[in-house]
Length: 202
Image 1 (cartoon, rainbow, N blue to C red):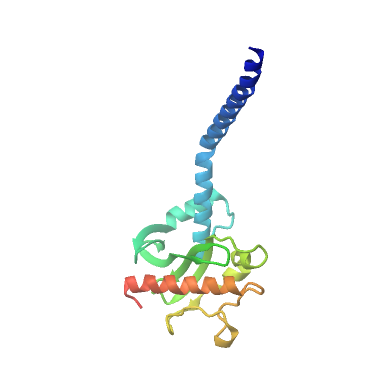
Image 2 (image 1 turned 180 degrees about the vertical axis):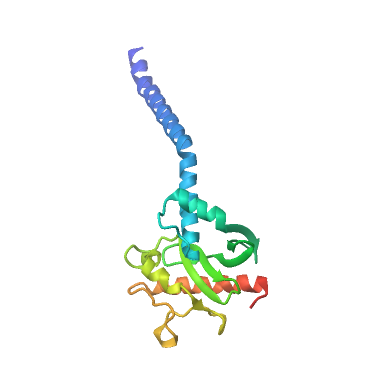
């Protein structure tokens, strides 16, 4: 009988301990669910306001939420869920989702367009897994700020941005990360082309 007891005791003990910690983790996850959701929403609001170049000075999540709710609308247009910057009843700018393969995984983000789709007004990324210090630098402001006010009214061969010095140098490629830079250029060109075709504006 002693042998039988010693055999089952560790199993019962581990089962109870495992159940206890599963319960704790589940309770913690449930308790923080709303906070995590708010933080994720705040991060997206921040990026959309950054694209529109209307971030509040404080960068406080509550202030960002206030500006976002006052100025930005979400709608389905051109086959995509986009964000629209409003000035009263007037549409000022659009944040269009873009996505494509990078060097190590999917790169997804939003590209800002002005009211008549003639300029790229900004860009930011919501997901990327490129190499830190190299391709990962696409998330740095020094790279993203190059996309402000890029004229795309004169489009050739369906290409809206240029990262080659020989052909215009609108956007400098990241040193040591030419594949990631080319991937960003490609996903922007392909997704904007698709968006414009569905809108029938290009």
